[in-house]
Image (cartoon, rainbow, N blue to C red):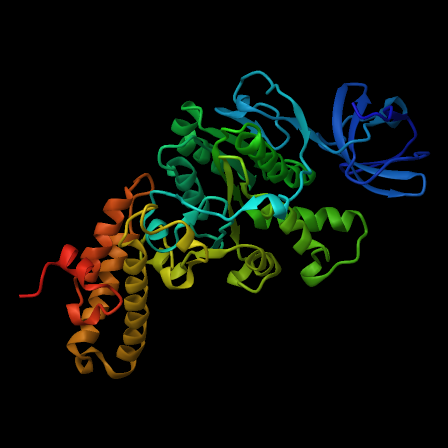
Amino acid sequence: MNPRDWLRYDGIREVRGPLLVVTGVSGVGWDEFVHIECADGRRDGVVLEVSGDLAVVEVLEGTAGIDPARTVVEFTGTPFEIPVGDEWLGRVCNGRGAPLDGGPPVAGRRRPVSGAPLNPTHREPPADPVLTGVSAIDALTTLVRGQKLPVFSLPGLPHLELAGQIAAQAQVAGQPFCVVVAALGLTHAEADRLRDTLEERSAAGELALLLNLADDPVVERLLTPRAALTIAEELAFGAVDGRHVLVVLADMTNYAEALREVSSARGEIPSRRAYPGYLYSDLASLYERCGRLRGRSGSVTVLPVLTMPGGDITHPVPDLTGYITEGQIVLSADLHARGVYPPIDALSSLSRLMRHGAGPERTRADHLPLAAQLLAALARARQVRELAELIGTAALTDLDRAHLDLSDAFTAELVDQGAGERRALDDTLDRAWRVLARLPRSALTMLPGDLLDEHLGRPS
């Protein structure tokens, strides 16, 4: 308990939707966690607004059945707290940490979910890969331990399926590893599919899953990613021999919508598209909780997944996310329409820290030059395809046609893979070499001769 005694008030002036308006309060702050004693038991809430002697409280379980005359509100003096520790692994809970898997409540030392960004003076640069088993990511936009790398998607694309696949398949070589997933605003059907996808990893004790459903309170949606990051921080940094932890947050657009709704309930002045003016700093307070710490073996890597309303990458949520994070993985509606999964647009995607996670002694010596050559060839193929639409394929050179053949092979042989298919890195890079073999050796100018000899054979 906070050193301050809990403040108890029974002056409920109004019940309005999920809100209680409490009168006569003092010493109460925003985002304070609240216990509500009513005739049918105990409920929880969060302070949304304080003005004078009034406090507006959102009741997480809803206000149905609450009798103001028989209700007492206890203000705890602290933000929302959850237990932390290894007991989270293998558990499925809601956004507040209440079990959904039929098990007992998670026990452990309690910590506030508000957290804080890692101290810059204690940070180590991100390094070494987190391999996802997804070829298009591992080959060209390698995820690095301690990085924050978002997935940008249009509505209707399989972003949740990709997030679940990454969470189920991701691994690091030879070191303790686990995954924390915070699913935000899911339908019940989506939640069931996600649980099925992650069942094996959960049974192995390598996963903590927090499910916030679409019909759960919006305030819980704001607490869920913070709870997930608090759990991850303890797993990574709570001991000297901590784990490498991947945190998957999906869908962060649902989080931003909840933030906008709560901001409106507080009466705050709206900014771009009615989002609060502090949306940037709020998102940064989440994304910046990843990284590596000096003297600790663990790391926290964050993979936010978000949809772009109307397909607009300049929408405030993807726009601000792009300023904070270190690259992006972009899903393509065109590839999805062609039946390609995952529909990752390689030329629109980028991992700015890839050089810290790939190359000799990290992945393979040929990884970085191979990726550079493949991207250069794909960029040329895109130019050729646009040219062919103007002049026809008959007017193209043999080299131009080879680039078009390479582009088709890249999509079919490297990008397209099963939703439950985990590809080893060697398999992925070998596929990339087979794709590049469509071009004549003279066109592979970004690859050194010894690598060409090793993988494509010596010229005759």
